[in-house]
Length: 282
Length: 308
Image 1 (tube, each protein chain N blue to C red):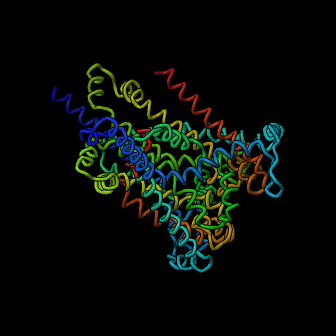
Image 2: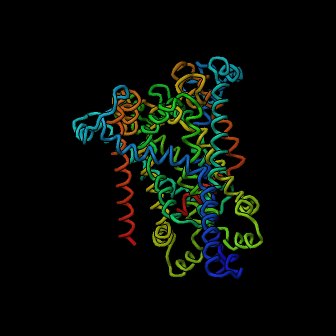
Image 3: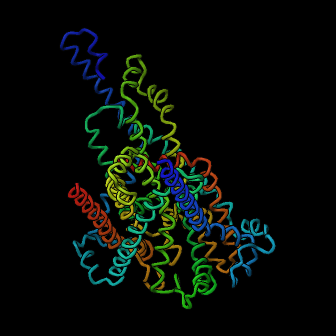
């Protein structure tokens, strides 16, 4: 009996070791493109494509990272992206948390029907109605302006949905008790709901921020002049203008990813929670 | 909600008056919470959605006034070669991306659900491609896929494949290159959904199965897979919808080419609307996109119902 158990234990350790090795190799493989990106960004152009592959630069070229800011208005692209991401995220948080409270804790005629219409639109692909949206924005004279993207993305139904899911888990009795104590609905919202929903707000913040930062098609359609472009469009422009300057392209790519990588690695927990809840409780 | 009102003794007439006033106030308060988001949502999402249905039956080149043309935008599609190709390419992309992502994300989630050292680090590594900017990722893969000097083909030659594919510069290999990049980038996201599903499975189920003599393989098929059904259902729908919306990756990696080999539906919508300014025809194609997405979702719901 004892022997059998030992044998089984050994087998399990072996299996775990095998899985560990497998995951290690797989993770490294998945990260190879990023490694190649960083390594190439520190090379001279001639070293990027070589036979056989050269994994590390001969002499590290930090200068690539200062060059990219002068050959193309990268700082402007950065500024535009930061403006868009911050404004959209803030507006999204503010309006969604308000609306989510209305949809989860207050009662009024037609509430459920309205909410259904709301989330129904989440299933409609944006590409299916981007044309009327564009025509509308054009008639308002807002194309090629950052504000057009703010208006399009700050009021999404997704944020309302995510926060409502969270508010539903907060017991109604809590609000009821506060009402009896004479707190107004606004008071309940600011003093009770908001502090309780910090994790959900954190999730929505990081999801929205990363999505806006990485958004490509929206800016691609709306922003045409160089001074209005975002970092994604700027990077694409860089690639088409300097398609043989591999190391500069790679340096620009690293710089475009860096802020998101830092935000993600520090707030990863909320990011993953956000995906898990918004995904699963639908 | 009306408890505090009822607590005050009032005669009936006064009571109902006060009650009415109170409930009107309640409705106003509720709307004051909803309106900031709803106003924006109504103007910039709901109206355009309704307008897109109307626009699909119009001819509008954005210079001349729009004209109602009935279903001619839709009949035009039948003879439109590029539309047919883009429809085929979209299905081609989806048919590979959906099952491949499903299998990889489930496999990874199962491995990462075990108590192994460094699980969190592995999870971060696998998920990382999903958060990185698509343009940067597409640019790197384009370089990795470089036909003569790229690391991928150098590796393939090293293991004895003398004529490796031309990837993004070849008509028949551009789509596979995009599919590989897409699966690589997206599987971490769906893995997170699967991990959430796996963590909801009570350990006792496995213990019970093991007492009944089920080996790991049988446990996987008879416990894990059935319990993950809702997750798989959801992941499949998400994957299908996102596959039909693919645009960014293709725009940056191949621009729809070489030839029309990676021209997909959304790329075609973009082209018709914002390059050729055929707003009506483009809207009709986007309506087709919407109907396909809706149809697939309904079919999947039906299949799920039948299996239950």
